[in-house]
Length: 287
Image (cartoon, rainbow, N blue to C red):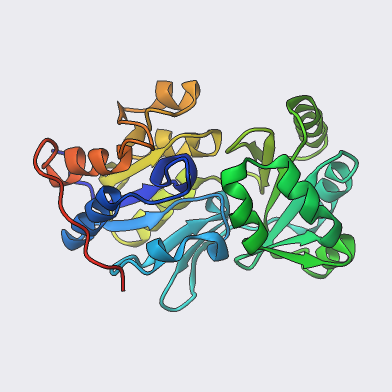
């Protein structure tokens, strides 16, 4: 069995089931991996403030990879192990392009997500029902998004944008890529996620592993969406969820069950614990 020492887990469509819950079996498997000394961390497009408390409060979770790899944060201290934000000129250029399209725009800065007050209703309208409570709770409204961006232009981790349909999303994506050198991915439906050049989950996850003294071969990653592709490719063991997009399935070294049938738990049991097929462990309460 491969010596896995670092485990990066996407959240939406991976750790979370379709109702945005973490199953008891998945929680127990993560706890068991941590007990074996594996560094288990969320590897998500969400900001730090959007990572669920039941994951962050799981004893032994020390790091969070957020904003698609723009940051890796040591949770106990708030120290940034990885920080790859936009330069001010590129951020301003991206904003000037994306605001021309009908969308609900959020900007991730210093672990939080900000949106204009008039975007909140659009955000709910353009998002899947199961995601709406998270969006309402995590977004911080600001009165003037353009002025806010100018004030924080050197600290922007990610642009996260929801569109009413795929043609609008695709037109906006094409316009941005024609003018700017950025990373453009998607994690759900008609959304667009923009990061600084070269920023992705894979780069950040491997950078953390190397900081901790491990090699790429010691890294395992689980994911399902376009923004997980680099992580699946770069990890020593990239595992696609059964519900993953075709490109993720093709890139993965292994495929597990879907997110509604304990796919993450089964991957951990098979590739880290060596207990797949045995009676699954019972989770202890999160602290």
